[in-house]
Image (cartoon, rainbow, N blue to C red; front, side):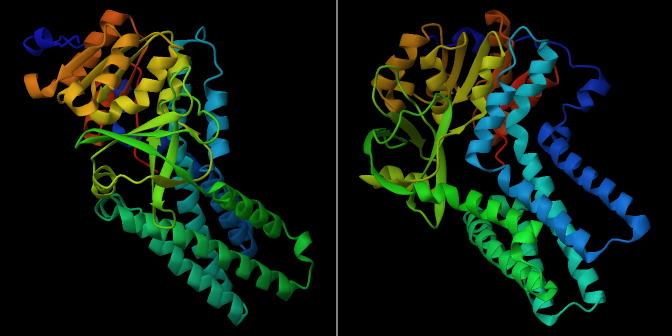
Length: 430
């Protein structure tokens, strides 16, 4: 293994920061995720401004709400996510780096979900207020107010502090609240159509709800319980091997569960060339993963289809550097094995062979003989920004992809982006 002991004692001279004006747009508050959310809200404000001269009607408010909810729901569908990645990564590496730099931010699509959900909630609140003022039928108002209360609960649980502190509750409220919202929207729409006396098939709302219902139900039609073979190289890591279905594409992820109605956890698929099936690397990072490692199941639940992840943007660049800490090696490994794009690995982890086992480490070194592996048990915690930049400079890479915990990912990504280096990492929005 190539331990960076020398680098540990030497400061890496980082390039200068970008000019203040350009650096401003690299601030986390202005990342593409937030820009997309702001764009959706801005479009809704334009619609509102155009409607104000003629007064906003309850019908306009309800339809605007439904359109925004449709955006929020559909943008999270697995097939659409894969399509977005396919379109964004179709650009050749001959295109200007600045264009490819922006296209690679495709994984920030969750901003559209946030913008649509917030805008839809506000439009629906306006609909309820207008319908109340105009004396709408009691059954319409009862359903509308129930929906408002439900939407408020869902939005409140998405607040960053509450979501981080009560993630399991957030997930349950989001899932069951979302399903109940769909049922109540169906009831409200059919009641409103009943009061007009027109055919449901002549209502745009009816068809939009049909599409949303199919989109929400589709992943659950693929729900199945599958066998899993688990090896535990250490008390910190479990490597789960699956042989069901088709081999997933490199960089995709699979959601698994032991209680399909309660919680789901996504992990990067690690398909190996010439081998059947795929693996998931699961490290001890919370209650669920801890229980999984200590009490290894022989079957788990899966649903939906495999979905593209952040590392799939590698094909937009001639060379990339992968920076991983601990089990972050999982999402990197399938790309390193596929060798589709020249890459250099920087991996910071505690006692790699003792933690992940000789088999996995040898597999990494077979395709990455020059990998820069930092043993934190021997050398302590490294300066990941410095290590990432040194690898980027020495390898002549065009981009850095970081797979780590939230704090370190943001430190590396924003530390490099502020210096004009294309950098990418998870944004924890799902």
